[in-house]
Length: 428
Image (cartoon, rainbow, N blue to C red):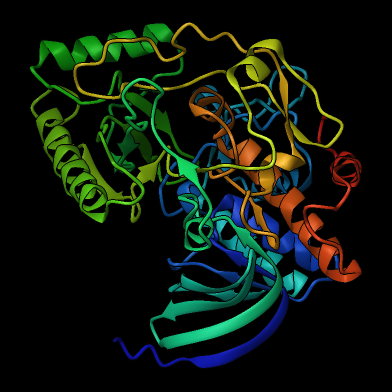
């Protein structure tokens, strides 16, 4: 028997596990709504895949308000965004979608917004176990760099990405494609400097094809379908995406560790190979991401589960938390897979309902981020960060309101969440 001695940290209205973009938005939203909120993050910064995973691009953000808009406004105000060919606005003065973001600016924005809202932030900390009372979480064990702690909360939000908290609570989950149960691949983020002068990256299909030919002509093989090269807002640095690591399951730490090792090795070897190409002699790596980018983990079974028909027909719900406009983006599931990303799925804009944030089997938990309830192909559409931020902001507000009123998260009126998101500027 292990001696997991712990200190009691106290009681909270809302406890958010995971400080990625969904978790950070959830905690800030809950605290702004008046809840005593704690945010538990395993790394040393907030933002998750956006920051520590070095994916400095928020997809499906154009119709999002709230904290997504606040983040863009903050970054724009400090010159920390950049879009195609160095532009930030179009000829009409409107913001250009698909802008690359300064990750250090993102970290500070979430820090400041959390502190200003009164969130208790724990870094280098991770939810490790729960004590259940029926279908309700009674206590949460948190393992930190400074020892173990326990705490209580009225409502818990699983924003771990992999659905770890829901798994601890005994909730059922799925992962992988319907045919072979293979999950979407992971990718290691790479930041570089030293690209050729006047090069602007892979902004178009023609750009990507030209770069693919450059790699092929010089005998450079990559595991990704195509390389993406995007200029960043600062230091004339670049985001280079070139690697896929396959078969990383959310309940297998060995496969995750293998992916990190392989991703970093491939990144190093690919950048070194570039140096033999004329014009790329000065290319070198500034850093690789501290956390590998995971596209798919546990998809928790919820009170509503988004289906293929929902995204193909563009279904709308009265308890919607956001409108998804991003298409299906599966990527290769193995190194031999040649299927195109959309896999024949052509989506119409559809809603994520509040019920998809409510896990079956736990009465005081709300899901936020990519662990919400949906099938494989819907997940491959809604998993991008604009939508995940929205689920976080919605989950935080609902959790605060449930704590305040003593209402079960399962009985809370999801239409009130929809109304809140509309007031925050989200297109529903």
